Length: 137
Image (cartoon, rainbow, N blue to C red):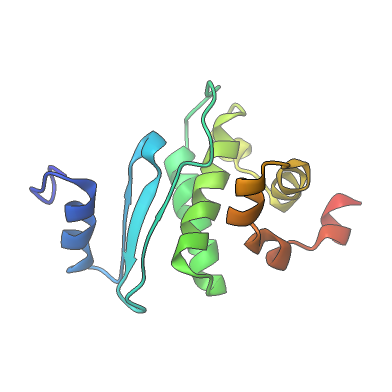
């Protein structure tokens, strides 16, 4: 917000969206918001969950890389934000920056173990992108 001279994350992302094709503002435990200038989509996604982080090293980079994965795959903006939040959340539960980045098998294990009805709804797109047979065997 200091960079954009705005007072809210929503105003900051709108200001950034005037300058770049995909504007994203991360809000820590409040999730992330974004505007995709190529599609006009605007979205907010809550943080995946919170727990005591072991190591936050690289979590922002993992968020960014995961957002790129979803963008290149053509996912809707809200799914890209959810995926990036999930990958960053999974990474802080492990030590070591880059080595803590979750792979597809880690994401699949999380998805298959998730019983919360709201998470099952919010992350249902994972059923379309995960190769369950290859990743869980």
